[in-house]
Length: 350
Image (cartoon, rainbow, N blue to C red; front, side, top):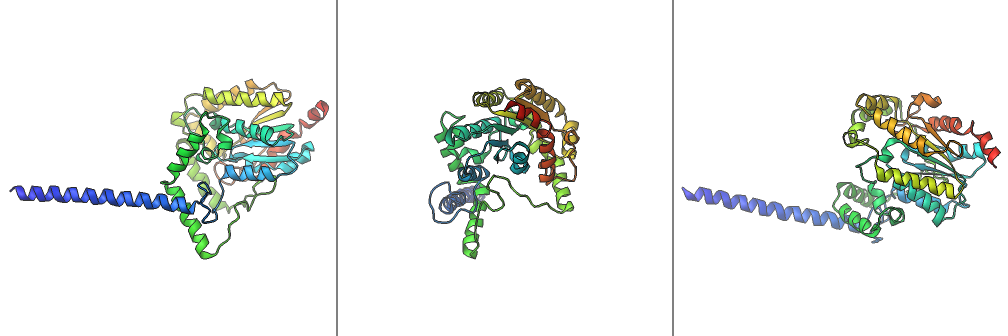
């Protein structure tokens, strides 16, 4: 009677050994693929042209190439990328660059301003900054794209080298990185060409193509369903982060020290998404963030506009790319509302 038990234990032991060996082989093969292909040019292998650069790398490269440096700067998350620097130039007479990057938190905004001022000596006179509540989230991490670029992280992390190294090691085993490696390899084998800056103007403005209404509506519906949990992370948003508030205030101090006029704007998600957030209780966070930012600004050379409600600046519900991002039409309307009334004020100051 003991033999079946022993056979069963032997088979189970053999199965788990085979499973672990297979898993180890897959992990090693996966990490080797990601290292050799290096789809985002993070490891310096140089065997294959990178399939793309991250949004953080693209904006650094574009800013380096933008000569002469701008007098006006738009910073924030990807939501500000639809704010057209040419409109800013039209209204203020200032050469402008838009430095929007995915999921920017206040420490990223702070680092961008320091990079522009200290590394490029950009003569910034106007700063337009997106300050949606997410930049003050108390628990969510910075975007992984930033973690591998020390030029950003050194301004808010005491050990930026370790952060970069750990993120690079972790990405060797990530599914997203593996997909990019496979796509990069396919591009090479199929003879395709890669230009990671296609679609960007020299001033950092990304010219989105508008989707058909059906595609846009599907994206909006997904955002209504998922945004509170997956992006806003409302369940873990019980207060504004003290540390991130400090980075915001340090950004303002930088601007004051350099005589930079600041326009802070709370950018709007799609009205259906905003309504869903309010239904789930996010109104308290919006109100706290709005009151906090307004309280940090002097109201003369530092202006805050709460545009979380699309109607507050005359925006159009049809001018959206998805549930999170307006298209450039709403961006133009917002800029005219923000800057046109303030232009006489600005001229008087100069």
